Image (tube, rainbow, N blue to C red; front, side, top):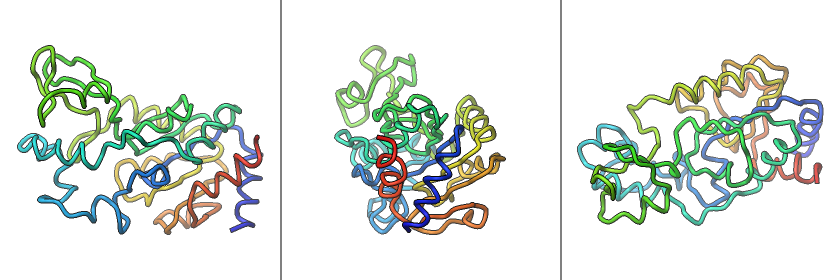
Length: 246
């Protein structure tokens, strides 16, 4: 791996319009499980399959079971940014990284200091009453009484601003993400198996010089990349970014 990290360092050094596209593997080092690994959410046993529980149709017909799973398995209040989040924030502070496009909903990129973050699948930190549209941050939503959170103003159900299966992505977020990716001179893809669509298809808009893939397992886009590193993204970016730009 050492030679590949050296190559990554050189690519980063020569780039000044970097975009990072990331998935669940970015946050596993913060104690948040991914979806498809052996210990991931899709391999845990519930009364219903997790992918069914986090669908729009299931939410509409079985809110109590949805919120039980959501609060139990999708909220990690004590999670803190890890090395990857900090390395990307560092690159942004230096003016090299222009945007992060993430499939994660945990808000850890912003907690690490990143400013330009396109959250394709929303965020657990934004919650809205489905009736009067009152905003609730995460702590306020969790403090609401009952298994199903109801608005303290009008009594409507408070729904997290996360994209469930069967729901469409936010148009403004899509446009911003595609604009950033299409104008980048370096696209770093990390911590994602690139199997979730339409999010994964956004990398097809990239027209820059180098595309780097950092993931523990191979992906269907490996042959399109100029550099593939099959290792933990935190270890790679620590050596390629934090150990270099102090």
